[in-house]
Image 1 (cartoon, rainbow, N blue to C red):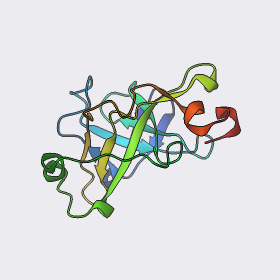
Image 2: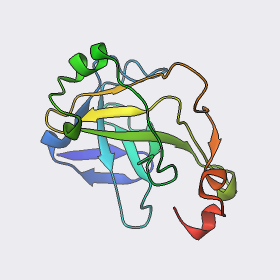
Image 3: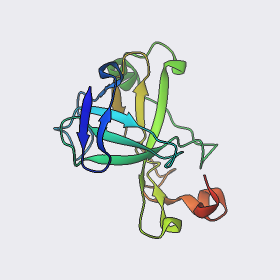
Length: 150
């Protein structure tokens, strides 16, 4: 299927790869279908592109790249909503904020996006506690400049 986007032009996606968020994402509740776009130029950053609103695209990253010790619990209710049989069925993404000066890039570790790879159901989970920050500097996690790569 052809997907028109504001940032990437028209891209071809497989309809079976569309991620479904029954509750949307916090602040974007009306957008329930997203495509995960990845290209060689932006790796390891991918983009969670709304299928229904071309101007909505969130930069996301596998949190284990900048934060190898990242760990959190998923509630039984979230596991049920995702219809997850095993932890291996799930993958995690976290939203980035990418300013003009890339060294100021932050990652939201307090609200992971968890997706069941088998059925493409996803949820953004707001973590309790203060273990992780909403805007954690990526350079602080890496212990070096972001320009050196994730």
